[in-house]
Amino acid sequence: MEIWINPACSKCRSAVKLLDAEGADYTVRRYLEDVPTEDEIRAVLDRLGLEPWDITRTQEAVAKELGLKEWPRDATTRDRWVTALAEHPRLIQRPIITADDGTAVVARTDEAVRDALSR
Picture 1 (tube, rainbow, N blue to C red):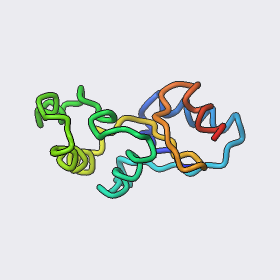
Picture 2: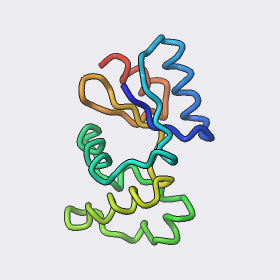
Picture 3: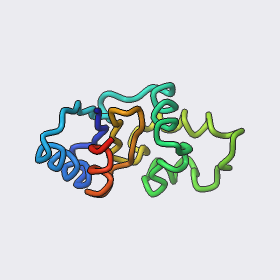
Picture 4: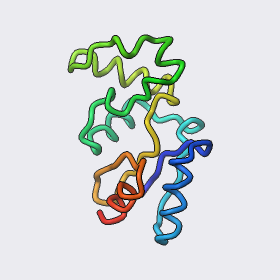
């Protein structure tokens, strides 16, 4: 199991604390430092069953600079969104846990973390 975190994020710290309390075996990826490639983002999206705009933090300053809220959300622009996430990892929603069964969850709640642990 791997968790993508920003250590400055309270939701990330809560998720790690819960993983530790449950004795989970996991790897931490500080995705702002160890930036995921476009292929890694696509793989996580497949595991999540989501589209890139579903995990984009559109309130971030860079999102506003890029005008992301105005970008179309369809198959023809999917790669453009993935590129934006790879070039600006701060836009990626956090934390994301890749579960042992090949799925993933956006672990913003204790319930989502427990869901990942149960897989």
